[in-house]
Image (cartoon, rainbow, N blue to C red; front, side, top):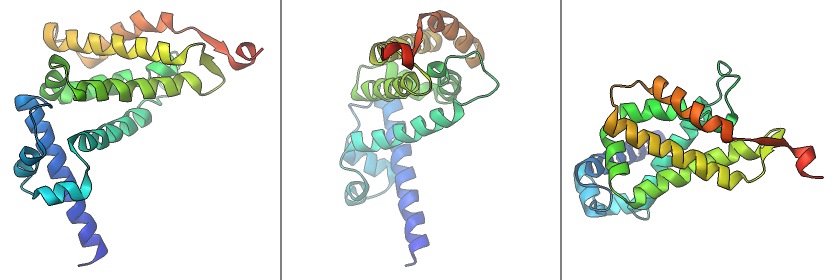
Length: 192
């Protein structure tokens, strides 16, 4: 078998496993999905699962890593010069949430490792934006926790109470509420 053919098989298996995990999370929640359930739904053997992932959390982390890459790339928009860099993830994430509503509802309505991992991924992304460039937040981890906690609470409210709103509308409201609290100081000033 050629390397390209083997690579395509690996990618096909990984996509099938990711799709299976997502379907099972929507149906029964993350905690209820077992590796055996995921492998069966993906129509692969458990050995194939373990050839690629240590456990289901590893599979979820890889999926979130891909989402993080998308958010980091999509968040650099020259069309929004007045938006704090730490908030640049919000519109791409809201658009993503609107595309995977059922999955997002399954994550936010059931306390699970999946919810914790989404929170952690977003905090890391926001904290990175708060510590790069010419300005930084005085307490970047605290600010990132505030931003992400508010964001996820607003997403949950949107999905359960106002699903008719567009991602753009929710994004505008989120940024109006959170951006004033993001006070930056120059690196030069903070280092003196």
